[in-house]
Figure 1 (cartoon, helix red, strand yellow):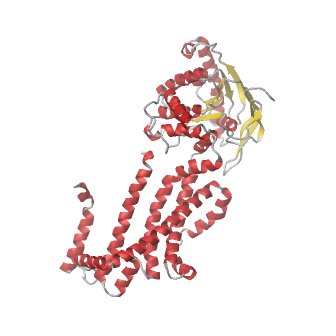
Figure 2: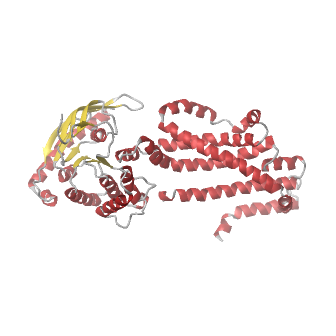
Figure 3: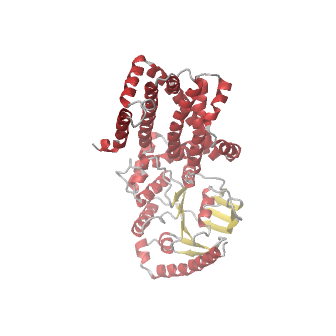
Length: 246
Length: 266
């Protein structure tokens, strides 16, 4: 009952989506009613287009995201730990951070060709800098008395990096990963718009260009729902990983 | 210089903030701490007493002068010098037991021995039943008992304590004092205890070293000498009150000096 109340605005929006085009408040060619979109979605599912393109999207997303998270987190923590690396990399991070990473998709195509490699690389680059910054901040914020306690207990400097700095930075790394997850969806869809061949983004642009607007909306809705579910699932994992924080 | 105990020989230390001028924190401090002695370092805040402790711990580099333990110069942290901080410094992602096990793992003790030792020290600080709690679930006094157990479990010859009870309420602090003295009776160690609390220093220590306002120097050293009497009895004696009064005056002057330094913007 409470869940119903919480999602009431969404239900209201879906209801409006159905009713407004039917009553002529919105042009049905611009926004087809929800029921028509649902029918189109069902036929996309039946034909297997949704599954094959969805799978391709998720594969690239997971590959790019995983690479971005691992490389970004490692780089950020090492920057916080080794001053020379910080001096070398930080100005680059600062200069490139505000750049819209989707602008690099054509560059990726030039370097890696029209295919999955370019999509994965685009997603990777999109996730990289936010991960670097969040893990850097997390590792910089580590309490020096924690490091000293470990050293006094006989830990080596390398052990301190793994056993004290990394876990101290974990809350920020996990928060950064949530941002990276959202960014990876953006980069996934936009790289598929440009590169085509397969993926949900490709499906959306293909259907839109062909005038199949019911089906195009079905594709958009699918991306939205998958993104939402991924974020919810990630939040649940993150909460259990940080259970010690209370 | 050979011999047992801790020796500070003309130790100076300059603090270099990221911005602003370097500050001389310690100026030619010389001090010895005898084996199994409980020495309190007493002084106003900012006098460098914690810095002196961190240098002895090997956490900060000794740039000028020399610090030695049993004749060997200090060059870095080591398990012979355990430390307890005011902020407890427990690993928040580890349970009580895991926190205590950490140092035992670093000491490469065999697993059954580690388990046994961890439990022994959990019992020693009266935390039986809280083995699997996380620090965030404990009160301040309990956290500090975990930190003390964690440090004592690896059996350091020297115990460094940096205002360990400063973050606790007065009642808890009193209980912790008794507990610490009890533990020290059963497992005697050399203790260097940093505090700005005069009563705490006199109550716990064999000797109290008063430090001056910045730059920190040893201003005077007062023998407490409780001659084996229980602390609870000593507190009621006249010498105790006199020593507290004397040290109060001594520290008060330095605290006033420290305050005027601050208003000078030094």
